[in-house]
Picture 1 (cartoon, rainbow, N blue to C red):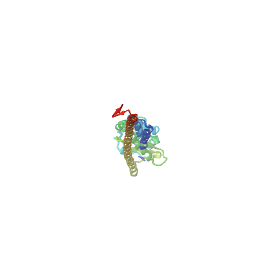
Picture 2: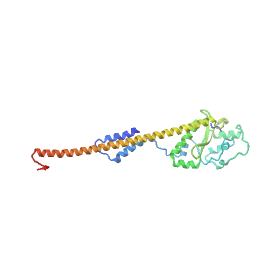
Picture 3: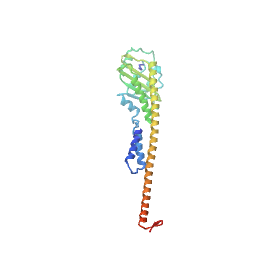
Picture 4: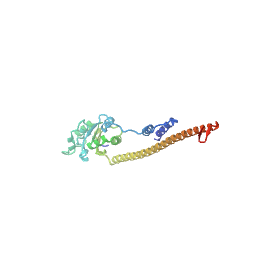
Length: 272
């Protein structure tokens, strides 16, 4: 087988400053702050995994069936009818296919014919369990699509060559089987180096995701701290306004008493 921000939180603070001496309701402030907190977050696409697959690869085929019963040895045989997966519909009898004789040589006319018939095409086989998981978990669908795209981008037998890709996933979204075939009858299994490279790429992706999740947690913590600081600042500002208002009222009353005293109408604790 040839397999071959804090910045947005500051915007909310600016909004608080813009109101000047006016008071704002907590619901208005929370609404503005929520908009700022989530402004930079990227939403998960509404596309299903099948829609993502077909939108990325023109005329690509998508099949929901469990191909886990096909052994790797069978999958790699030159006479395995893998070309059926490049049709719009697949008879599930292909899942129970077993060789009936000696494996034909690569130069056999039937083998070459099947290679040519799939040239440049793409097909993917998704287990029903995984299909159901991805329907309920768009983030998982995005993750699996990333694995598939990475595989296709990094497994050409040589740059510029026209290839066909048949990929079978397992129930966890990992690549269980694959065939990458090209014109000229070149079809082989993945080398140890290719497998190591693929595993290293997947590990790098996992590490990148862990790092991104860590950064997201730190970002959310900073936003929470900024939210608390802004709320305390607004509360203190409103408290200061209340104290000032009380002082104004008190000063006004004292002014009245002094005026009455100067007019000679002040008597004890009241005004004559």
